[in-house]
Image 1 (cartoon, rainbow over the protein chains, first blue to last red):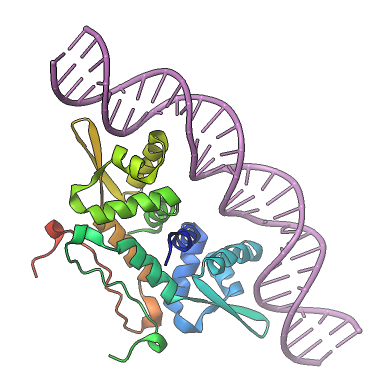
Image 2: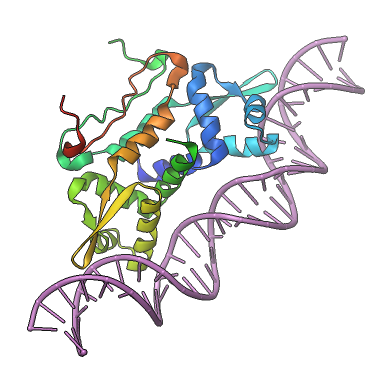
Length: 112
Length: 112
DNA sequence: CCGATATTTCTATAACTATCGAATTATAGA
DNA sequence: TCTATAATTCGATAGTTATAGAAATATCGG
């Protein structure tokens, strides 16, 4: 992962409504949440929500799929892990440290 | 950790020079790096670097200490871990997942 | 105290970002 | 096709952030 895409991801998350939406999506898992439901839960007008979701999608943090009239957003865990890995890379001056940052939905988990 | 301080931390990191500076500090460990050395390594004018370091400090991501004429900045690992924990909280819809995000310098490590 | 070094604060300007109503596009059911 | 629902794009405005030179502050050695 390179600096530029990490910056886009961090910028995307650095906003009240987007951070809140993203966390709901992270917690929702693979099923995702439709745009309208996010707008309602966060009490943000649909056009604003759409703007924010577009930023998250553009940053690669979420994916979208149409399902009938709804557009369902879900968190992309790989992107999140990439960002966290970038931040902790070679941390602590070479001292070994427990920086295993990993969060995967069931389907992407390596069978142990 | 609450939303507001996480947003400040993410905003602080969502900028080319600050992200680069922060990573150098993360890698430098507890010894830290003086402001001038960061400005030089990143090829940023001192006044701009100072502005950016102030943002990182304000977000709680770095600490500063004076040492003779220099001001030495170091990464605050606890803050970084707080941010990552906030992002991954309750991830993956309740499915247990390896989201142990932790990065500590030697001195803050719990003796196992 | 003086000159040199290290860094910050001030100031102005340019560029970017958020907001949200209105208009538009896409889908579904009768 | 008509109507309702779901979401996005457009457009104007307000607010925030980055930039970097010049001036100010702090520290050190002699």
